[in-house]
Amino acid sequence: MERLEVLKTYKIYIGGKFPRTESGRYYTPLNSNGKQIGNICLSSRKDVRNAVVAARKAFGGWSERAAFNRGQILYRIAEMLEGRKSQFVDELVFQGATKKNAEKEVLMAIDRLIYYAGWCDKYTQVLGSVNPVASSHFNFSVHEAMGVVGVVTDIETSLIGLVSLVAPVIAGGNTCVVLANEKMPLCAITFAEVLSTSDVPGGVINILTGAQKEMLTPLANHMDVNGIVYSGTDAAVVKELEESAALNMKRIRVYDKNWMDIEAQDLYQIADVQEVKTTWHPIENIGGATSSY
Image 1: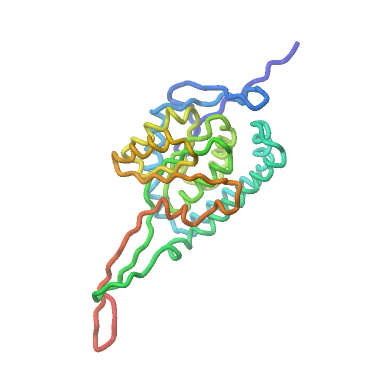
Image 2: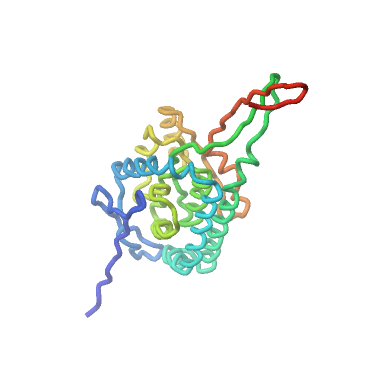
């Protein structure tokens, strides 16, 4: 008798836990050979709201962590991904990639995490400035985390696009809600398993699977989401994001990059999800010497 394969059910990742979708729905995407990938949660607008709540709750603790500690945690994610790279390669191949391209994508994802880990305790110094003013003051501009950021991954990659968007967001002290690739979701789900064992506090990264079109509107309209980064060229998606951003002045960043290119990693992707804070500090002139107080 021919055995029926047990198709795995993959859960979403919210607040450091793996719940089933609130809607109870799932879908079964097919790979390039027409084989079912798995039972994938079809997230609802309630799942989006739950993920935003978890991200907001985690924001205070994450943004206030020492920058070098955030770097340590990003590096730990890379370490754990390195230990499971064969699984990610297999999943990429199963979803339609060649073995060579899959191996290249996984190694690039690991290296990209290390790249942004290195920037965690340096970007404020490089991006910040001391500004000239016409009064007896010091004037400093520094970068601070924006808050909760929505991450809409591209439809061309399963892993590297996800990592390339998430890493600069959390390196800068933000938390995020990720809408995974709808047709190739496996690596996003397995990446959540990596996160759960990588010292990342629950709620810092939340990953939802399902129909991006269904989740995009509640994410873009949510008043507690401070910005959205989107990888893609779909004009309809960009228009919807920009129109929704007007409700609470969200910052929208659209990237059209080949994430497999080494030049795709960029310090300014951290800056894109930062707010610039300017501080004035008075100077007192005492006996010809200048001092601050």
